[in-house]
Image (cartoon, rainbow, N blue to C red; front, side):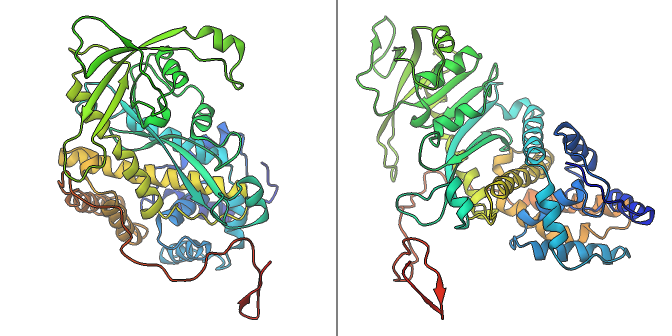
Length: 461
């Protein structure tokens, strides 16, 4: 996208000084060169201006990290930052920033999210891996957004709700907790299921990976695709797959057997060539896990895995690994509650998707800081509190924006890391917390449809 507005020489010097400031928020984790490189790769070309791609993206990310997600607060923060540096104040009107944010390419934010998440996962120490292998977790959730005509058309509401709803499928790294990839779609309708969105991610299975997922993902096609790519899976058996076809060989106990899955009929979304390349049978290992913990609803579950070597991968190790699948639920909670991604603010589908990717990128940047703090404290990143890290970064940000030199920025950074290291996740094994609503809502009826307001009262549409 090209913009022909020329920028005066004096303004260009101000922008260069702005990009060189060591205390610019998030510039330590996401440099201007990375942003410009992603813009060039996406074909996003623009002239240098006050709200250039790097400055706009940093403002967008700090907007996602702030409890107040409004554009007015983002512009006010930028105005205060320039005034503290003795630069010419920008306009307090948020119109320029909103136009710059709409010009920012969605592909740029998406590519930066994938790049930062995968780079941190690949640099994880071997001690953080599971038996020397990277583990990836896949899970899905739903997000709400403003009830506009464009959003309603692209993301229809659920049958019980009023607002448009998006379905989001995210792939997390178990070692460092970053988002590796994500796919978005409508919550209901054709192509909106989690398995359909998982197929949109393309070749996500890499040789040597171990994938964790709940029983929704334990289908023949997912397992066959992972095996063809050289990856392994550890998932819970789908409740609809009965009866089991047991392989009756020697040396297999009742709770640890080999099972054969036969290829089903070709689905509509798969080509004949892809279908013929898949083997007729695949061999898996089925494990029965007895849950004898007070407060747990599940008493027995069956895991299926492609790790058939019971000497290298004991049943207890696989059961403990699957239990760590719950980390994906905690990561989604951090995104939806801590970063307030549960209810989006975009008025158009394009802005909604861009806002989701900005949340995921901001989440990865917090994870980068947490990994540095965990390395310094010699603990795993999941032993540190994400909420504590986010609160600490938010508290240090105003002071890091006004640093005068690199030494002062380094002292603030080390102090921030030391504070994050102190926020540990408590060891609370097997705590009992029933699913119940403690705070009752107001006894007003739910709105069923779009109802305009007139004279302070709602009129039935």
